[in-house]
Length: 288
Image: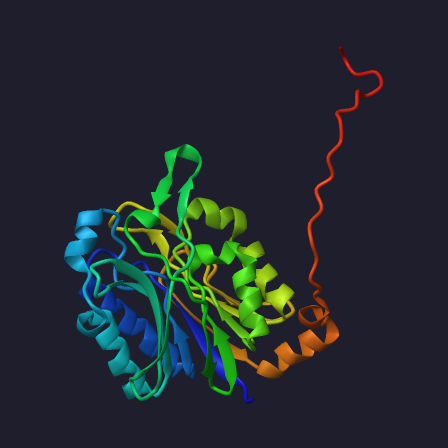
């Protein structure tokens, strides 16, 4: 297993897939010029659109999608593994998938992953999201061979479900991907700590390309794309919410070393949960 450079592309995707594809191309070329052979873009690279009817009008099938076509072209031209963090894809059944695609240097798709966990939440200050109203959730985790190591897939809200990452680590993944469009509110609270936790508890690199800033559809995302090593150290960060490229070296041997020092993947044990039932006890001195 050799050392290679990975890049995370920070974007501010708007509502036009064509404009977003052009912005993506500029940043990906910058990453390749810095020596990255694995390049990851954020969740919803193709477009960020809140309106459900607008989604249906804008998004199309994988074979007609402009972002996918541009990614295939760039992968071939630049000789890179191009990871579309996700984009909305119209499925054959007429439903939308929030889909990640890993494209090989020959332009062919190595693997795809549909986001499993839907972002259905009610936050402070009236911020509310119902991803399940527009997208069909996936049902399969995924691990794929990449440049002499293995990569595991996730997208944004998946970050809050550690069992997904544990299954991929047990499946051999030494690099975990978390392309995202974290809201500013949740990003400020949890982005760094959750990403570092996933790296530490699995002894894996984490690459997390993010959306950042105020978008055309009115949402605000956190930015702060990160690359983290298996010991939880931040190797690279876009410490803002502007479009950017960050690059860091990935050495799969460091994952093996971290797992040898703290072999929690091997030490895990099955267990059952016992619920203890007891009658309420009055505390001494409690007010009556």
